[in-house]
Length: 67
Image (tube, rainbow, N blue to C red; front, top):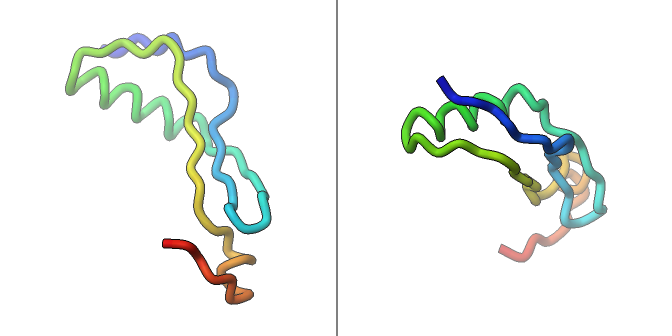
């Protein structure tokens, strides 16, 4: 069983166009930690996660994305 010691509080998604941020449900991250432990027997002590992309609003106004 994975021992979740992660003391992090915030996991974020951030829009590259307008800078808006939104927290990711920590339950999703807990499941990811469990999967990492199950596959690699790696006990996570601390993690940071920020996913960057484009929010629904910015996608809808036709901003040209640098891909």
